[in-house]
Image (cartoon, rainbow, N blue to C red; front, side):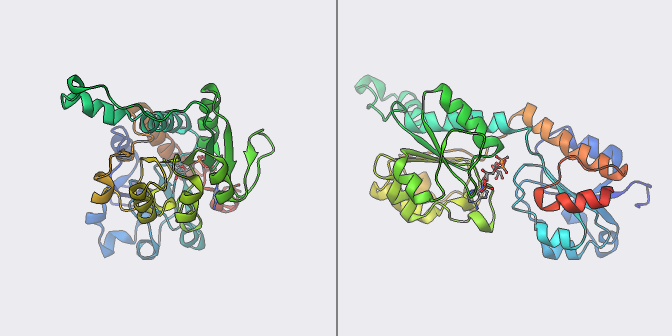
Length: 322
Ligand code: A2R
């Protein structure tokens, strides 16, 4: 316990939900990484993580009283979950509440890339229209989308694509029994069959550079890559080379390998649409994520089962609740 009698919580990273800070302050004594000392580190019982800030082995080793990490976001690749589980620390995340929002953004980015909407906007702003019409663009008509990942968000994207009359394929480790979309265990094979690839898998070591030079070559010269997952899923150097050489046609990216730094080489290309990781970035959805972060903490400190443990923690969460 802290001096004020409330548990000590470390907020690791800037969280973009304005309601979260007051909700945490009501329940916890909140400290930030720059206020972490050897003395108070010994009493930290909870972490709220997010914004890509790492919760690594070194940080966990400083926090012997830590019980729970409540991650603001569905992706938790910035948290070293095995190290947390080894210390009996529960990790929760915010699945489900952002699926539709991220799927909306994905379709917006996909259409913006296919139809070159930011380029067309620049064309008008720069006063170039009077000197001639905007060049014709590629089309979503008659094209097939290969989803890399068909989980909660992938399914929400697939539903939207159906409304657009766009056939859907998917790659994942396991085929789903509840969908009619064709499953490709081999990503290169799916890239050959698809015109557009959309990445919506978790980040981390297992999916690092899943999209590499051979996948981009298989996608081909009219191909388009959309990444709304994690920057680490795509080999950015291979992507830049492919975009420059016309190995693929274009890319729409919401995530990058070294966020918030985007390589100048990407920014110099005309055939890319670049967004600053805004997939779930609306007031309503960030508020829903913030509420789930707090609900998980409330459940834990009331001695109830947490609501949304990450899958790797499900057993630990059940054991601690039992
Ligand atoms: O592989 P499976 O059968 O577990 O299918 C999951 C797939 N997936 C992978 N596919 C290929 N290679 C892998 N190493 C791999 N690991 C996972 O990604 C499943 O189809 C999908 C993940 O679905 P969910 O767990 O429901 O995640 P959700 O909520 O759709 O979010 C996906 C990611 C987040 O982790 C953030 O990084 C990003 O979207 O916002």
